[in-house]
Image 1 (spheres, rainbow, N blue to C red):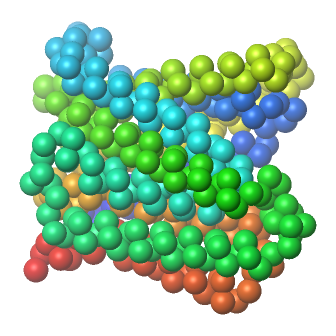
Image 2 (image 1 turned 120 degrees about the vertical axis):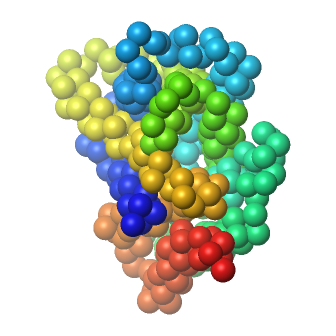
Length: 338
């Protein structure tokens, strides 16, 4: 029962993350760099800080905890900065491919590399069991099938139809950006693996990874904030922040987007706390989160009519890919139980 509950909690976090780009559509009269910077403050700093503070016992501080693990904290922050590059290109992949296809390709690459490279970089090769590797392969197959559906969509729709579904649709540019995003975004999982020892003594397993999560997101925030400020300067969009008439609306929806985005890692931490009796699922949990993110993002893509005008064959391929992803979330545990 605890395993099912843990998977459900991770699924809820994935659903929230996949929904985080919906509030952004409600942001008014701001450039991309202005709303991305604002929502990053919530998603990468404020909510992760609140999450990490939940784990601090009375009389102890996060700075003190990080000071006890300077090497691990430094590496976690560094990989967070690398992940920050992935965070930037993640937004661009949505811009050029839409929510469904952009998240599918970016998160698919992130799922496989994040699961495999974390244990490799930290030397915990024992986590890479045959069940975990098979699960990663099945996940990537599901992503590839969804990518195939995206290619079929691109080939079948006219330029006008593509622009109607995704305003700045550009398949070739989007593919390159999404793959780069997936590679760099995998650094989040690597950072969490390096940050595994950074936890307060006696902390509950469900909250154990939250201090390390904060370090990763802070590293990512530095990169994202720097880029957005440069874009503000380049595009002369500083005036966005002086538009008092839209501040209330935009702040609300940026905060909502940030809370939904952070929910995936808050849910991942809590969900893993219920999976301690299934070490295979703990090792595979990153891939589970990414697979569910892709599944829910494509459901949102359908709701937002990004697949409007596609043939029944294309939709069938998409559904097959989604089914494969759902199977991949519990396949490793079934294999490990044999």
